[in-house]
Length: 192
Image 1 (tube, helix red, strand yellow):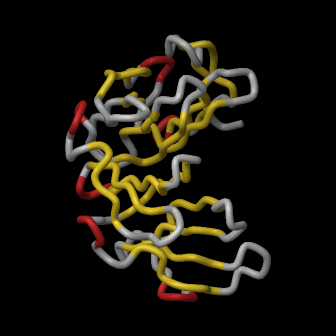
Image 2 (cartoon, rainbow, N blue to C red):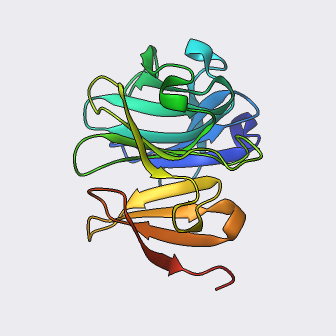
């Protein structure tokens, strides 16, 4: 792959209009031109801050890029302009975190993390919630099994304020109340 891309798993656009891609096998974050797709540079160097198998990544207006380091079971923070390591936001295993697969900032300002895809044979913990400023664990927002959730792989908050979670092992997208995490329905049923 261009720039050494090997096992691209997560991507996001920065405020600069460029595309940032998690290079899972290369333990780095790569930067590409947001219009042409041309490789620009390695934004976060291999292993920076303990980065190990980055999967999920998301910018936040606070000036940081947050990266789910899958094999180190943590959320790391990097300067959104330079890519320099800025500290650990969620420490390894905090709140039970075991393989962060996806992340979303909630309307409440907190960080929601899909814990599950391949994390354990039992299907991970579901969706975990962390305080938006401190990274302190606030508990499980959507427990595994709720509505059939097994191996949460992706998540986002919809314009309706609800949380949509892809359930990897059941091939479905499930919808939950964005305030209390209660199961609403299978927004996209298995096999659709």
